[in-house]
Length: 331
Image (cartoon, rainbow, N blue to C red; front, top):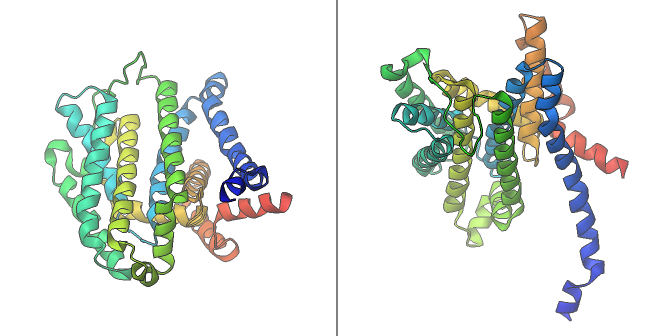
């Protein structure tokens, strides 16, 4: 009886259609982003290839923060620290003679994951505002450690002599080639984060966010689940930092300052806290508006602040939630 119900088209069909509909917009956006360098070169707007690449990388960092903050309820005010660890890993390994970008990126993910493991093991023993403050403290410790590294430029930052090699006939010095590689990596990791949030692990993480006491009473290893999520988010942020360092050929301690962590939180809130695409939507909207305002006024911080106020008042669930509501009403 249960086997026939499981295989029944009547049961499978309702779930299949929404999945396909849900994939249409991401696939369309992925195709448009893949074509963007060709259009930009044809129109003489090569500069924007680097800008959109940066948006993609920051969107990845914001998505990783949304993973622990939106779905796990862990408000970390030090997430940019992992971005910085990933970025500096590329610089250190480049100076050590490593030539492969893939090897550097993998090592950066490992270093960031290890850093997140050490920080998370301590931080997750606290809750609420204490967790916020201890993650901030650890991030500032990392910031001052890298400021003190005079061999890597200290507060002035450090430049890479050349971008690491991609291999397989790919030229990392070519902006379009690097853009496509970054796009592929970002799309793959965002897909993985989406699957993780939709999995049993993601459901358990959300349950801990909503009612930690109940989940603990049900026998869930709350601390371990939170630590695993924290390490995963740190690893993804480290990859974002490594991609930023490769694209910019420059790193600076300022990229892990607490203000950068606060900006990531703002992006997540604007995009939609706990929404599937909240991080990327918030990062894209924030950075695009910032770029437009910088071209037109020296007082660009004020309109950005106004955007945050308007979002809090009229779209408290974020821009991604508005898009979801419009999509549902259009059906």
